[in-house]
Image (cartoon, rainbow, N blue to C red; front, side):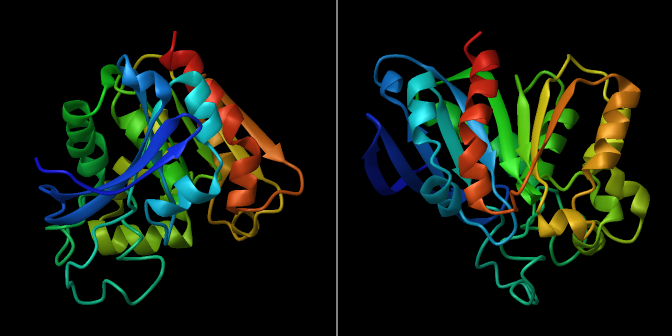
Length: 282
């Protein structure tokens, strides 16, 4: 599949690139960012996937999180896709910031008119890794995933739905129990329909209850002053309770004074890169 390079910038000895390609799953042009550390010039490196939150593109993470130095030092290829299909000319796709464009929620839609294009789950777990494995110096056996907010939800469900596929998972302020929060109920009813039993297949709190794969060490950072935490959008306590019940190891850190922004992500990103490197470079 043809990749078109959009940009390339040297950063901490490696290269931060952005590519565009025609997605088979999403039936539109998609962009993704990829950082190739210096180590990738001579050998295959582990791949770490980042999933961004509502309204983001592939640009937010690469320009605001400050992850490059740690990725360079640990020899990790870091891939950051866009958050939804774009320009599909679906009626209503640009009407609200938390549904449609920029808000794919990492599900495979089953409802009209979304089901043809809005297949971010398959894009992130199948199409994109196949594309990366075929075109870049990565080791397909060493892959991990992390993300923020809607993307934190995405990272958790991808890891929980695919035992053994990802070596580790982490999240910043993830939407932990979308079937019970306003963002999740809006997105899921639109993409997946009114049968709420189908929603649970994309809800980390429900997925962890039935998870029976290899042990996953989960790291979650949550800002204590996050407006969306107090608004009941994130519901981490429900996820932690489910993990405790299942004896699934999770490190949950409530960070005093931090909000939902990339300032918060930038503060703790090195810890997350280190968490993944421990498993990816083992």
